[in-house]
Amino acid sequence: MASTKEWSLIYLAMLIFTCTAGIMVNLFIVAVDFPNWLRGRKIKTCEKVQCVLALSRICYLCISLIRVFIAISGKGNQFPLNDILTFIHISNNYTGLWYLTLLSVLFFMKIVDCKHALFLRLKAVMSRKLMYFIAGVTLISVCSSPMRVWGVKGLFEHSQQHNLTNVACKPDFDVSNIYAAAVGNCGPFIIYSVSSITLVTSLSRHVRQMRSGDTNLSSRNLDRYYIAVKSLTVCLLIYALHVAANVLAVVYFSCLGISGFFVLLNLFPNLHSVCMIYRNPKLRQQFPERMQAAANCFYQRRH
Image 1 (cartoon, rainbow, N blue to C red):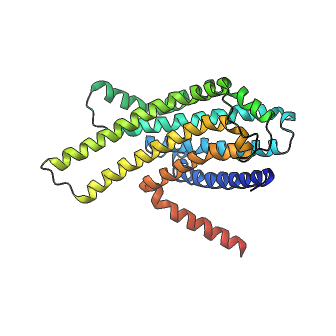
Image 2: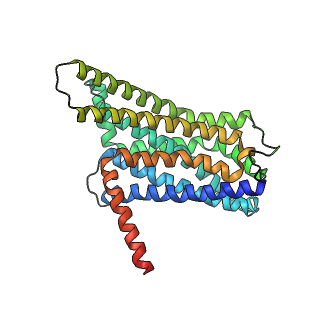
Image 3: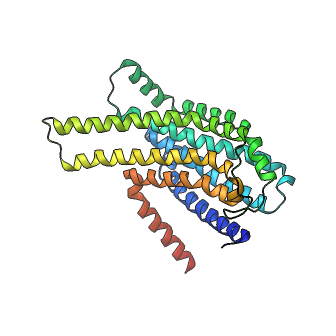
């Protein structure tokens, strides 16, 4: 049976690997579209939200590593900056959820065939005023963060080196912490779930109508619909697990410890970033090319 120290080292190694991989994946997403956006070239609204989401996740991963190393140093309470990092970290967590929700709503409006005047008006407004919506959800995230900051700060101040086999591993059902976590995650989760479930239902119904009708539906087109439905379902599952991790990580903090806490929080956003690359043809096509170019650059520097 692994000792407490061994569990802590295992979790720390897992965290370093998770954060490093996540930063690389999200840097790739930013590198594909963000330069064109900065140069004023026309890119899709969904790609803009993807860039902002990836930048938010990079910041979240970096702060996770910084906070863990500050906590490991045993001088966390001596750093006034630690309180600021806690606030930024929680705000980044919420902004990631809201950006992803905004991306889901944009995808929903793009796919769903609705001719209602109000729907078309909202679709046009979101496309033209995208930066206002991004700023709006960012403001909501920042305003939702203070409620949770004090609870998470208390966990770190009284944290010890625990693991899954330790006698101190007991769920902490602190009502204030659970309530703060639930309130911050509830809003984006409801909107994301409604848009994703509605979109999956609409696509499934559309496939059934096309198969039962007289239209000639090729197996290739049918496969595309099935892939879209599967991708949306997987992303919804990852989102739900991400929200659950945000709540349960606080409850089981004594079992996970600091490093395990951040591994759980960063795991599902990284998985979603990988899914974004897989389901986006542009990203999927450029990923092996960029990886090969990076490998060649690294090899040339070594030799």
